[in-house]
Length: 82
Ligand code: SF4
Image 1 (cartoon, rainbow, N blue to C red):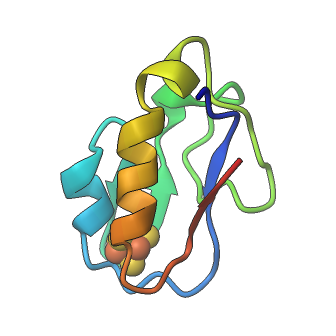
Image 2 (image 1 turned 180 degrees about the vertical axis):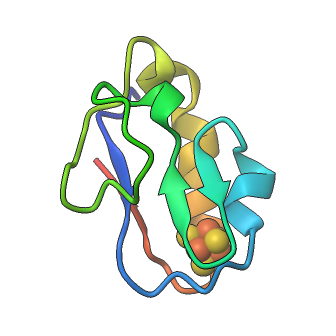
């Protein structure tokens, strides 16, 4: 099923698991994790917590399974999507 948007809630422990599972979407830095600008309609590189920007073009179809897998694998369950 197509996914509309993905974001990171507060509490990320920068473990890198999500980027390993889905590097197209998740960008883990030294102190945070962001949703990459390339896959967002607003072109920002943030957690997308306040923006809730939609996934751009076909990314919501193509990457839905990987994003879901990343969310399930997040040890602190801060990856949310709809
Ligand atoms: S898997 Fe979760 S805790 Fe780990 S870097 Fe990604 S968002 Fe942060």
